[in-house]
Length: 92
Image 1 (cartoon, helix red, strand yellow):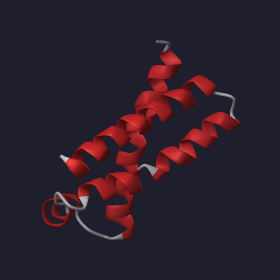
Image 2 (cartoon, helix red, strand yellow):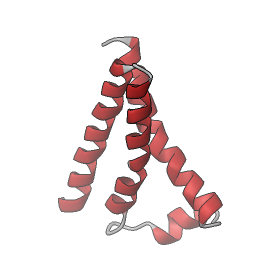
Image 3 (cartoon, helix red, strand yellow):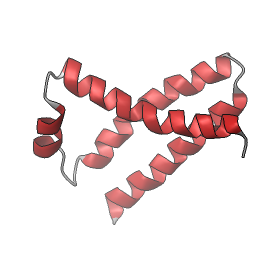
């Protein structure tokens, strides 16, 4: 694995987390610990992860536009890994 692929995977893992925090804190105006403890349960956790993955879409196209194809592949790989996690949480 090249260093650019690893960078893409790390970006693909961190960007949904950052989007989730930004939406909860600035848009919904909740304290992050309160929101996690009170509003996240088994039923809506896969949906929250799915919506957070929209940030990977924008970062993916940004990397493609800047000709960083290997990093874009890493972001796509991390998105697929999140997809496997969502399917596991949804059905098992």
